[in-house]
Image 1 (cartoon, rainbow, N blue to C red):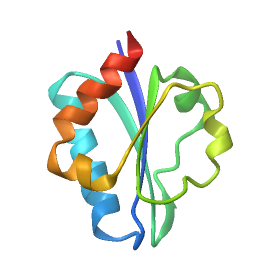
Image 2: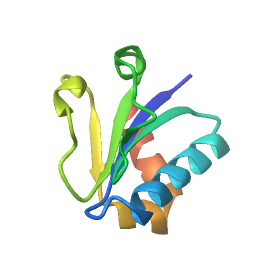
Image 3: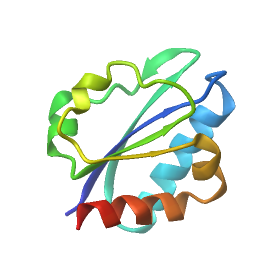
Image 4: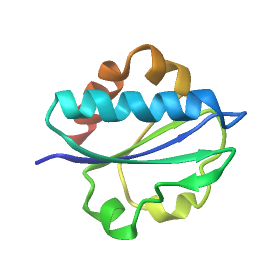
Length: 103
């Protein structure tokens, strides 16, 4: 089973951070993919990914408009980096791009 981890973060850390998180989870579920998403918004890091979740993931999605805090946790991971707006507009396409990286 494909496993994905994700990090979402927008500049303000409010709406787009959480909308992107919801869309990644929604479209991963539709594909039957296990996904864990961490949000790095105005409330700080929420739903923090464990190192085990990161290590076991086939790919990481960074849906961000800013820097990813503690990015070194993802060293040696395949990473798809997109803007939050792209995920909000078409989360399915982002999941498909991530799956392409797994091949």
